[in-house]
Length: 402
Image (cartoon, rainbow, N blue to C red; front, side, top):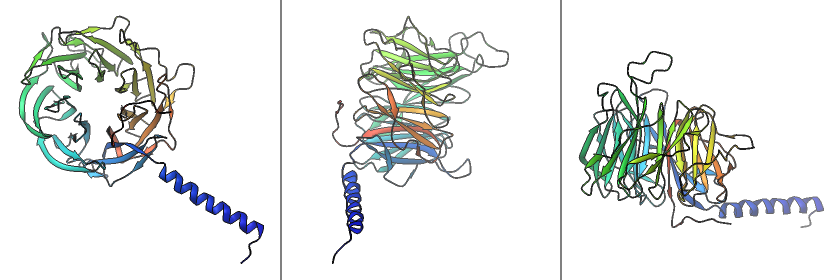
């Protein structure tokens, strides 16, 4: 059979397109699985969902790889993993629960066990050894509870601390976040004094609104306040994190649009960075540090932007915002409330956008920390995503690929 020249061109083009599609598919390399906690359904009591996405190692693009899994309650608000990435914990405010999932090598989530809390959970953290789960909870008071972990399973509470400000013990303290030093020696909690933080109205307390509580962890898990705790932490601290070598703690102040830095002393006490606080976008709601500990990223919920800073390693001092200096702001979808840097390569940044029902993705330049949007961002999720976390897929050590 003979073909005209036009037919030959059409045939060659079709074959080329098929080959290109095949090669593109073959070049997809999943470096992480990204989990996103979202609400579901039209009613407030609907079961929350955990969505699973694969992170492409070259582009950072996300693709859904599994049907969503029920979070074990309504209104999931926080997630945490063990440092070996075998276990995921999800806090649900609707039924005051924390649910434990095992993470399979293909990213599948398997429900294992759960606990019911006496108050609404706000934030979670796991110590590096994977032996304790820390939960901060309360909407009219603040409590830090430590639970024992055994092969990922949640055991009994081993310590419970009611958070209060000395001299103002009757004030209402509302927790906002919890983190653990990378060496496991201390736990830090952000909270604000609702009695003092009252925008537009009269205050009922002389206490500073924002606080950062610090607790040293003993070998047996007992928690004891570190010297100087609690520390001043702006007006309404919204999130906190620590660097990978346990030298610095950083806190976002939602009300004052600031980033507050602290140096960790040998006693686990904290010392303010002398050049701070540092300017952020409007209403910073979440914070993350890249795996190498040299860049900080903030999600600014009102501006719908990401701020990026390099860290001065000798002092911990953040630079001027390198994500927006001299260029247009790095924009997300509507109302970003959570942010992470993926752990496999430390090359991509993601935000959960509560009102956008999406995740925004950014490619991180490992040389200078600047970021640019990934292809096809934002990526659709379930309704009102509140938290996201990622685990490496396979053996992908931190590196700087070409």
